[in-house]
Image 1: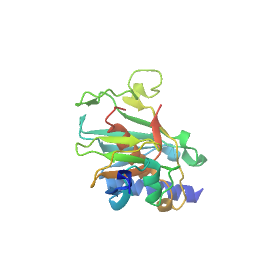
Image 2: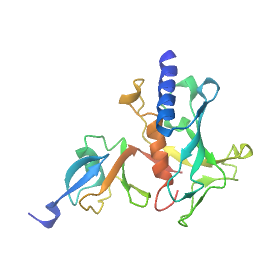
Image 3: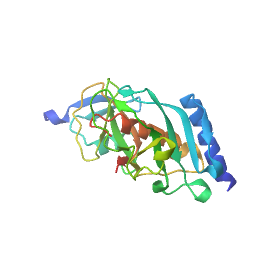
Image 4: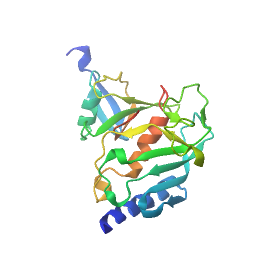
Length: 138
Length: 76
């Protein structure tokens, strides 16, 4: 259990340092929020809150136990349709809290308790950024 | 040597790599010392946009092209 908590705290510290943003932690490691996550250059506004729903202390191995939410009313200036960005549909279970949900799903995920040698939350954020920046839309 | 054996000098995760110009995305990952079953190849364009390349795709390569690798993820 303590190793898992250490995994989270090491991740949170890396995120805070890399993203130069406050990081807010949820109870029992059920979520983490990056207050200012920089978006790719074709987005307005240029940053968003990024809420990642986490598996908590149940274990971090299941990639399906991570869910992703960003600010509502974002738009792209290049005209690319944001296909996987849900603001009002029932898929967005946090629409009443001001978030839009991303239909973004991890397909490979190999975390290790030694954070550096396995996949980590920074890797997820990198993949999410690249997903948002896609030429063909998200 | 056929034209398809020509080597291209590209960058993967900021590290230089020479690869044949007709190589698959999965082979680029492999030649970078990573597992193509756990990493995806991403083309980074100068305008800040990206293209996440399927493993079976043969990207058109030019010298100096820049790629990143990342965990595999997709839109639902």
